[in-house]
Figure 1 (cartoon, rainbow, N blue to C red):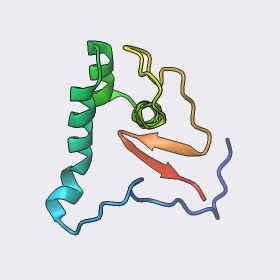
Figure 2: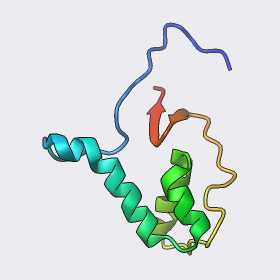
Figure 3: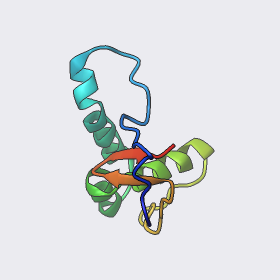
Figure 4: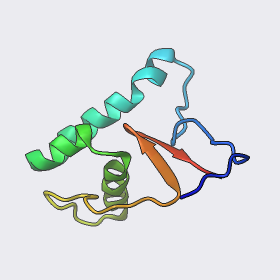
Length: 95
């Protein structure tokens, strides 16, 4: 995929923080990962809650919000994002 050098990337977080507390701003994603870790079933998903790309967490939260059952494994295993690129658990969207 060729990048347009004139298309500047947009950096930032995916969800608003609703706080100016620097500690919450720094560690909010770790808290989210810990919450995902404690609420998923199966060690395979617990491992993914900590080390999988952001597509895993996005798929997991979308399934929970839709009221769909969340399987014990393979959540987001075959997800491919075309509108974003990922690093760690941050997603950078192109506009």
